[in-house]
Amino acid sequence: MLNVGDLSAFQRFLRMCSGRAGQLVNFSALAAECGIVHNTAKAWLSILEAGSIVFLVRPYFRNFSKRLLKTPKLYFHDTGLLCHLLGIRSEEQLETHPLRGAVFENMIAVELLKTRLNEGREPELYFWRDRSGFEIDFLIEKTA
Image (tube, rainbow, N blue to C red; front, top):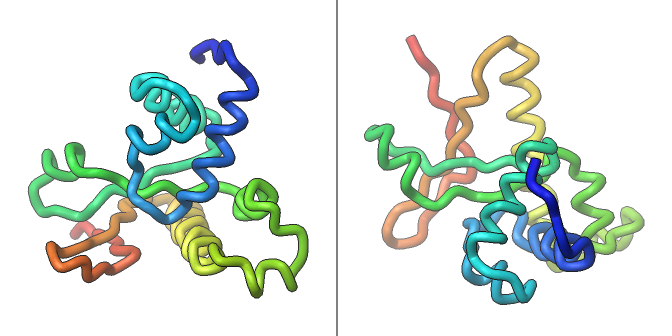
């Protein structure tokens, strides 16, 4: 694991990530908002992934190498932690929170991931977006 030198900046980074659940990962924007450099944002996101705090869903392309190069979307393994970081403390707050749609999308991502893993399968969870911005939140690729 990498050493996090500035714990308060890392905590700010984690909170900023929570505000981007269900969105494309933009390291430059995250870094700028947290007052860190791009490479630090990448390293810190890797720490969150390794610690099973967050996971990434990659865009679907038939070409496997394109999947690795294109921008993924960010989700939290624990929707309760996501809500805590967003300041959501009750059902009533969730109902009116501006990011309630992202919280719901995150919950669906986690349930799809858990279902696949509990079935003994690879998650193979993707999203799809066309050039016009039309999007399918989740695709599951089934192998023969």
